[in-house]
Image (cartoon, rainbow, N blue to C red; front, side, top):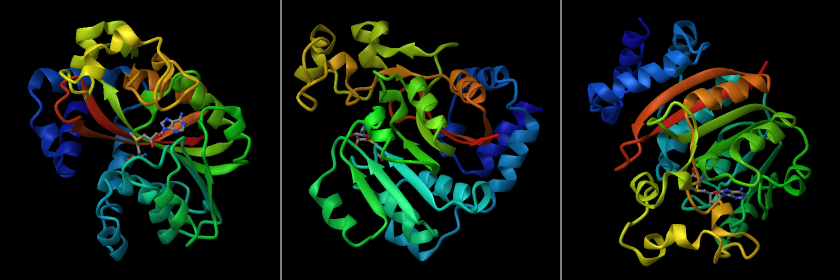
Length: 294
Ligand SMILES: C[S@@+](CC[C@H](N)C(=O)[O-])C[C@H]1O[C@@H](n2cnc3c(N)ncnc32)[C@H](O)[C@@H]1O
């Protein structure tokens, strides 16, 4: 039953890559999902209904077409159906390659009183763009640190788009814990690990497997010697060793652990979608989640 439903879900949402997954991979994915005790048919059915409202083309989609449409769908789903009265959010790690695109899309489309973008790489394009908006605060800091979190106050939502697997010191699950006390809804898009029952620290896989499971160029000198240099201070963050840097892929998080952590923190899954393999990585898939505080 659940298998059919997942297959339908994938087919309906036009996830070509997911459809191309071989049976073995699909079986692992389904097994992983079945282990998540609450992720049953009813929840997925609710997700299916919610999917109908997203993907609507509007002028803003045209303006923001350089962004990932699945992340925009997640934002629409959250602000239209899951937290329709929301007027505040924080986009955690919203800079690289998108310069606050998800923040500005949300403000352009919804009735937002206050928004925050927290990133260690606040750059000039962001600084000039933010002047067009009166309700965005940029925080140039590590969003895992309490010093950043304390500036945010109570929020309706946070976005964690392609950032969770990078988080160390504090680790990804501790970050979820810290934010669980200040926000009602977590909108997550994350490459999830599919080759293990439990979450793994990617460095623990060893040099070859680390490179096998990350999107880095194996022949590039930086990555060739990466694991030998784990204790060196990074170029980007002069206070951290590479092993503690969010610039690198750090974790292979599995759905079960993310789901269980959120459940323990008092959040329930409102939406789940598998968006297929992360390009060129056989053990990672892009998964989307929306969790809301119970
Ligand atoms: C892979 S990019 C994702 C960008 C954007 N969220 C997206 O979905 O396209 C990661 C971004 O998050 C930032 N980042 C990751 N971890 C962070 C942390 N703990 N504190 C502040 N910024 C962080 C990086 O500087 C970078 O701008």
